[in-house]
Image (cartoon, rainbow, N blue to C red; front, top):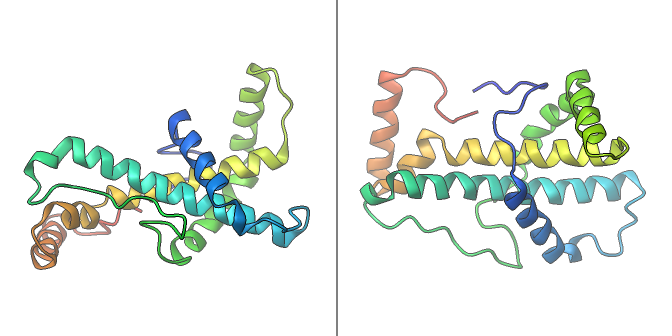
Length: 184
């Protein structure tokens, strides 16, 4: 799926936003003592939000998968518990870095800015660039995690008995539906 700069396919609802904020608070030691007014400090906090939002999006997709096909899975679909040491489903910066160009496009999108200004006006508050940028980071990362979690590869991984069968499912799907099945 080719994501557009001026349109979201999936956004975090208020429940997921609360979870993301709670996780950021739990991991605040990562940015404690950091001067958030500097570019480095701001990037560090935005990266933290994106990591947690990506993980939360992935979890949301797997929870949906559990509801939809959990009864057909070869083993119960269980996500690992969150840990203070790190993120469960998020293992490298590559996925987050791959989303950064899209975040930049969305921050610069006149349609996104207009929509945010309209939303702010309806809720009797001033448009703030910082809040807008944070919102674009959170929702884009959440969307990226959700799309990863709902991809054919991830679905096969969770419902197949082993990796060999998961690979077979993915290969069969690729034969029937040529193209990128990753959900991106």
